[in-house]
Length: 88
Image 1 (tube, rainbow, N blue to C red):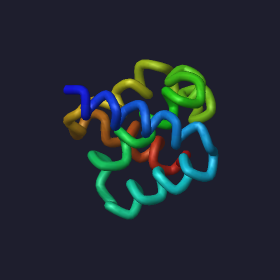
Image 2 (tube, rainbow, N blue to C red; image 1 turned 90 degrees about the vertical axis):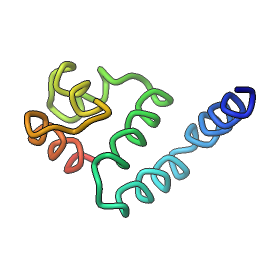
Image 3 (cartoon, helix red, strand yellow; image 1 turned 135 degrees about the vertical axis):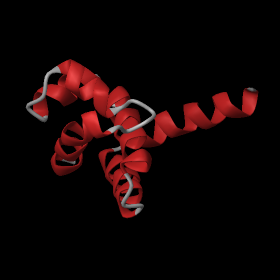
Image 4 (tube, helix red, strand yellow; image 1 turned 180 degrees about the horizontal axis):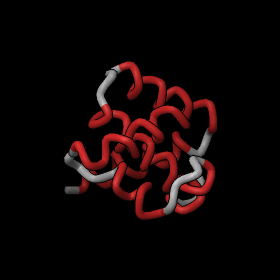
């Protein structure tokens, strides 16, 4: 478990830099799959403020933003997922 913590700490340190955060998001977007992009977006949101702030910037309510971050992207949250991907 120590390795996992080291990874998370290193990731947080890298994502503080806006250029690194943008590169991280771009790499996730290149996957073309919301299941790859949305966790990356959540990582960046957590480092740079909060999910609530991200929701505000994306013109979504917090509940819709959290729906974007569910591990399983369902048809019910497809519209929210598109909004998240368009915003990024």
